[in-house]
Image 1 (cartoon, rainbow over the protein chains, first blue to last red):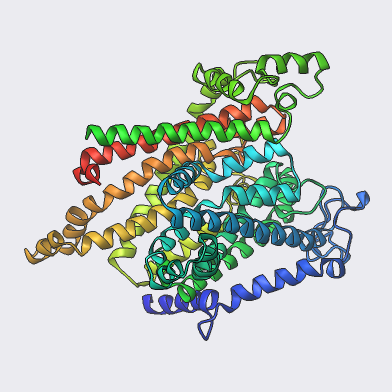
Image 2: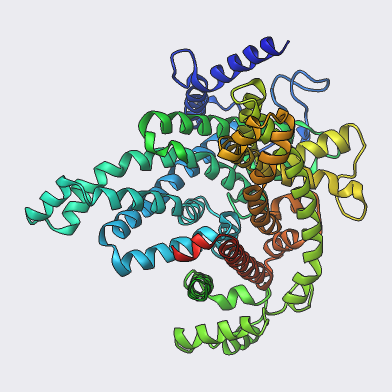
Amino acid sequence: MNGSRASALTLAWRLASFGPRGYPVVPIAIIAITALLALFADYIAPHNPEIGVLGERFKPPAWQAGGTETYLLGTDHLGRDVLSRLIFGARVSMIVGFFAVVVAGVIGTALGIISGYFGGWVDQVIMRITDTWLAFPALIFAIFLAAIVGPSLTNLVVILGAVFWTRYARVIRGEVLSLKERDFVRLAIVANCSKWTIMRRHILPNVINSAVVLASLQLGIVIIAEATLSFLGVGVPPPQPAWGLMLADGKKGMMAGYWWLTVLPGTCIMLMVLAANLLGDWLRVKLDPQLRQL
Amino acid sequence: MKRYLVKRIGYSLISLFLLSVIIFFFVRVTGDPAVLLVEPGASQADLDAIREQLGLDKSMGVQYVTFVTDLLRGDFGKSFYYRMPVLELYLSRLPNSLLLAACAMLFSLFIGIPSGILAAVRLGGWWDRVGKIFALLGQSLPSFWVGLMLILFFSVHLGWLPSSGSGTIWHVLMPAFALGWLFAAAHMRLTRSSMLEVLGSEYVKLARLKGLPEAMVIAKHAFKNALIPVLTLAGINLVIMVNTTVVVETVFAWPGVGRLLYEGIAFRDFPVVQATVVLCGAMIVTVNLIVDVLYAVIDPRIRYE
């Protein structure tokens, strides 16, 4: 009994995470499909995601009684097609997730390199700021910033970037501290390279791997943060279709039994985050053995 | 010890200082703070009055000093919506959040500790794998969605539990689960690694050599010692919970500080938003300080680092 259950679980685990030849097939497939949907949303989505037909409100998915094939996954409180909104929502999640992680990565990596290479009071100041930033719940900070600057896609990317850079700074600084003592850096100093040149040409290429691993691990966190902010009404402004926003709208219809308005967007978020986390885990083991401890 | 204490308190003060600078800076730089701090639709006279009060025509330095002295006096301004001092409002909501966080913590420890022990004792077994999947799900499911799904199942479908509000034990069950879920995974992983470390130690080996039954070794020798880091984390997490319940409290209309923050956003009640954030930061810095000092009291090695 135990044995068969264990093997079934092992199988499920392998399929979900590390595929047949050690590649994370399922996570890559999920992310690739989402990326394609996001890219070609204009051609794939059957309806306009922002404009609905008020006469067609709260239509259930096609397989339920009362559902029609025109709206495969049903419609929301304004008669908008849920499937189309989910497809366009993928675009928002992808854009915000990707760019926020890049913004955070650039800020964090730059500060980490500067802090680690210069040392002394520069290091002290940057690390104190990092600690303060870290002590604070990222979500609350993001909500605060969003409440000040108001909702928009660009603001969201900048805010999430400004909130999530600390982990990069910490990890990269640690790596720079040891890189600094290596021969090729010392030789570069002897060869009279300027500090900026050394940081750009000798240090940066050696920490980029870790930055990529951290970025993939943070993608899931950032996607959840975006959904949360949108859910609370300080993220993506309506009527743009974002998964978190759809959940906030769907919540109102929940007591009336319109389950598809909350179950479907949430499932999308979950799949996306799960895929990002599994991929990040795999990259961590593959690219950077030192980060296995994270 | 004294030196360590002074240093550690100094760090906390620096953190609080930086926090106040960051908040002050963002509010001033991203736009006109007067617009944020007056009610929507206020007249020009109101705007001028608040500018005068904040001293927005004065230099940044003077403005910052005014800002900090107000905070230190506990003057966080007045809520536009509730028409009462924000601090009073916050304190009236805090007990609800503490109750919710305490229940969520109990729940997360109840799940996290036994499953962590099982995973460590049967390392690599199927329970260990279930634990891994559980931890992964804990990271991947947004807590507000867990909350919504709970409502859908237990309130809408089965009709067993109330979907929102507070007052009875039934009201607290679902929010506590939705909030504790995330932390249960973290507590499980820490229990697992802490147990593994203790199980490999000399005194556990000795206990086994003495011929004690395995259950006794695990329960009496290993578990007790493995619990220390877990309880420390739980203490810190409790504070983090109180301050991150905003989403769960919003979903379940639970009248705590998180819900207050949400209302602050929804009603464009900026003094409420600012005060909640400042108090949250101060609370976390303080608890970190207390934990570090307690650690130094327990473990003298830390003092000399």
